[in-house]
Every structure is written in structure tokens, then in C-alpha cells.
Length: 229
Image (spheres, rainbow, N blue to C red):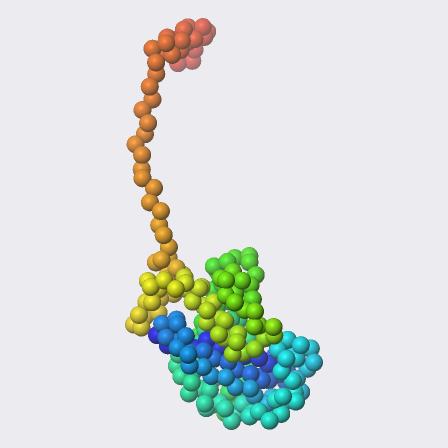
């Protein structure tokens, strides 16, 4: 089962308001385990990178000046991805940018159904908890000390580890084969420990003779008990 863990960095939040991709990072998985193959590319957005965004990822306009534009790397990117499922944290955001760039470069878009959104998976598994990448790394004990700023390839590498933990961890029973992808919740259910509690027979009630005599004496003190009417 081949999957691609993907992350991007951008100049802002909305490609249709003028924002562009500036970095793509991909990590290849086989049966949920990283193979060592990666794809990483900085991209010239042909516009300035706002200063408030530079504070997030550290990628400046000057750094990107000599990098290729998206249309020149689109074919290589699509060849690496192929038809593999894309594992993305907040897939709606990244897919919107990727497909906008592919459209402007006159390439076919990637179906949204090809994406697996780990943000949705994490929200289902940990309702009410914070589920950004840093918090998930802390929850699963994944070292993210190198993540002083956002970076597409580093974040994709961390997400690959988080994704494995969301599937249930490094248990042999989770390598489910290549024939069919089992859903995350099904995979979790298959590996849960089911505690079997033995059924005990009802305990017999034992009344001592003196208790029965005391009860009989008490009943005789009642006036016109309803069970005699």
C-alpha cells in the first residue's frame, strides 16, 4: 500500500485572493512505514511573501527569487505522487492550493477523494482536544524539537510518524496488506484489547431462623396489613 504524506507552505490563506505555493514536501510510505523516498521543492511564487507569514515559516521573498515557478515542477511533482492516497493534516487547505496551482499551470487537478485528512481522524479519536501537529507529536512522544518554524518536508516527516500512531502504533497486526485499505477506526477496533468479565451466578439469599422469627413477630404488630385484605 503506497501513500504520500504531504505538506505545503504558502504566502497566505487563499490562492484565489492572490496567495501562492512556496514549498512542497512529500514522504513516501509503504504499508504506513516511510521508505526513505521524499520529494521536496521550493517554488518562486512570483510575488512578495508577507512579513507576518515569513515569521511562521522563515521563507523570504529573496530566498525564493532563483527557485523554479510551479509550472516548471508540476510534472515532476505529479509523477512522484502518482495515484497514491495523500495523507495531509487539514487537507482542505493544501488541496485547495495544489489544485489551484495545477489549474493555472494547465495540468489536471487531483481529486479531493485522493486525500486522507489526519486532522479529521485526530478530531474523531480525541474529541475536544487540540490536534495540531505539535500537540499530536507531544501526545505520541514524537521528537519535534527541530520544528522551530513550519517547514513542508520536516512537517511531512513528523506527520508520517503521527499518522502511524493514529492508526494504532507500530503493532504487527496493523500492517494490513495491500489488497484493501481498512479505515482508521476499523483498524483501531481490530487491535483494541477486549476485557472479558466472567458472569457470576446470582448469590443465594440465606435467612437465619432467628431472623425469620423476628420478622414474623414484627408482622403480628401491624394492624390490618394490606396483604390480608
